[in-house]
Each structure stands twice: as C-alpha cells, then as structure tokens.
Length: 140
Image (cartoon, rainbow, N blue to C red; front, side):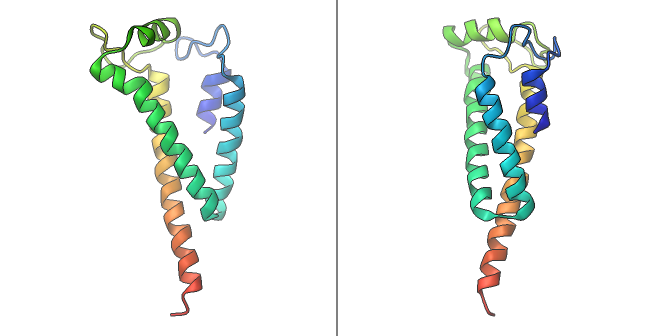
C-alpha cells in the first residue's frame, strides 16, 4: 500500500494536510513493514501470515469505519469535531457536511477503498492457500 506511505509522508496539500508533520511516524513505519510482510505472505500463499494479515486488515477497516463513518452517519462528538477541524477541515472533501456530521476527507476515503481491496485480495489468497494446504494433505 504505497498510497498510505505517500499520503503520510509527502505533503500533497490540500489532498492531505501534513504540513506540520503527521504525528504518527512510528505507526506508519510499522504499517509499511506489515504491508510488506503481508505482500510476501500473499505472494507465497503462506496461510498463517495471510490469516494474520486478514485480521489486521479487518481491525484497520473497523478502525476506519468507527473513526470516520460512524461520526459522519450519527454525528461527531465534540472531541472528534476538534480533531477533524484541526486535521481534515482544509483537505479535499467529496461528501457533504451538515451540522455535526463530518465526512471523511477524500484521501482517507481512497485509503479505505485501497484497504478494502487489500482485505479482499488477501482473504481470497488465504482461502486458496488454506484450501491448497488441505488438498495437499488429502490423498484422495
């Protein structure tokens, strides 16, 4: 997921707003290493690594949904309104904002789409890798 690394490290204002740094450099490095290992596991169809990757991608997707989509649908808390205003109010927005319903910015929406693709591809590879492993054990 080169896209994540680009939007976290390269100032593409107004696509992202990291003019003052992104504040999560260690997490971004860890995610980059994880994604590299997930890519190797996918390529080799190493099912334990694929299982871990699917679980991490699912957790990450759940975090994206609870962070961006729940506040958009039900309305943002005062804390999220402050965070959103400080970090995302000047970035590209594709969805309408009303009252306390703050949309995910475009860069995070694209990230979520890329993450969904990575999750689906990795889950398919896991299914095939696990099935291949079972078939190899079955002498029938």
